[in-house]
Amino acid sequence: MTTDKTIGQRVREARDRVGLTQAELAARLGWARATVSHVESGGRSVLAAELLPLALALDASVWELIGERELE
Image (tube, rainbow, N blue to C red; front, side, top):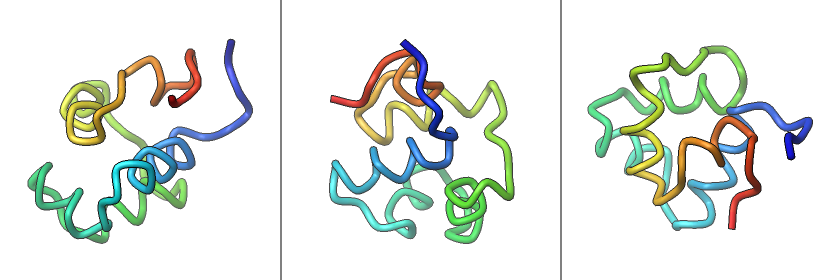
């Protein structure tokens, strides 16, 4: 079941769900805070190699992030 949400919107929802700031998520990933902001706003794509670390940092599945399953 796919949704019309972008991956950036799903990243933000997952980040909010686990109570992380953009800076905290960025630190977990070794990214700049601005990178997280760009992903969430749709200004930057998430690379395939970044999906699993991102999902783990957000306590989500890759499937949830790409929209094949709803965030729980």
